[in-house]
Each structure stands twice: as C-alpha cells, then as structure tokens.
Image (tube, rainbow, N blue to C red; front, side, top):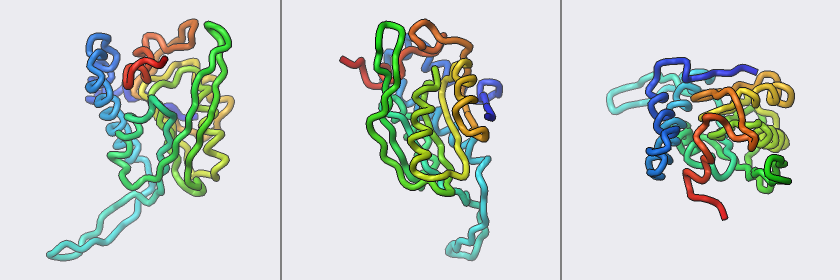
Length: 216
C-alpha cells in the first residue's frame, strides 16, 4: 500500500486543514463544508497528475490543436453522509466521472465497542476503471474496508485510490492486511492515535455532525 501525505509538502491545502481543525472556525458550518470541498478539489487536482493520458485533437475557430486529456474512466465513491462535500470537491475536478455511494455507519455494542454496518450501495460497473473512494476521516479503517469490498463486487478496477482528509496511523496497519496490495492512499494530514472511542486525536471531531448537525 502506497501512502501520500500532503501535509509534508508546502501547499495551500494545509491552510484549509488548519481551519477545519480550529474549534472556533468549526462553528461556521458553511465555512466548514466549503473547506472540506476545497480540500477535495485540491487533492483531486494532485491525483489527476497520476492518471494515464491520451492526445485529443480539437478544433477552435482558427484551427486544430492537440490536447492531452485523461484516458482513465474515473468512478468517484463516497461513504454517506460525511463524505458528500468531499465528494463534491472531487467532482468539481473530475466532472465527467461516474459516481458510487455506500452507506456505512458505526453500530455501538457498548460505549467503546462497535461494528460497522453497510445498508446501501449504488455503483456502476468498475471493470477497467479507476476507483477513487473519498472519505474525510480514516480512523479505524473498518468502514473503508467494507466500502472497498462492496465496490469490488461491482467489477475489477484498474486502480484503487483512497482519499482522506485526516487519517489515523493505526488505520494503515489494518488496511495493509485487508486491502489489495496496490491500493494508494492520499491524505491531507495523518494523526498518530485514536482515543478510547476510536476517534482520531487530535483529528477534528465528528465530521458528519460538523457538516450537517448532530444526529438524534
């Protein structure tokens, strides 16, 4: 598994990460959603550099030009509900992408232990395509594993890319054991630990609640 951590480079993406972590700025829900989307767009742009390209001839009103355009068919997959603004940021760049959605959530057995359930899957065929799974918070990796397995039932992608805003280091050890070996993981930032409730520390809190309000 290949891991790319954008926080190790000088990029304006780091400014948006600092804002979504800030507990005072987090009170502005619109700004929080917009920043998640901006991070998605910037990460999509960076990932676009790694795709396969082909030449395409186009005609302007004055003549013919040869342009280099992506040759890959991209499928963007997100995990509901926290992934939606992140997904839209990617879709703003990969505007011709096909789309897939997975509903996955934690069902708590007690205060500290939970299992992950998936209830809804919608996806096109993945055969020969580039699958990009976007999920803002990569904590334990269990939801992502279920999402990947659900997607692989839809075909055999040429390439699997995972994109997260903030990932926890322990998730990588788990994912290395369960995901295809050539999976690539792109992160805006990596934190070192999880707390007793399996939330990323320092992380930013519950992304879904910050985006859309608390659940009943």
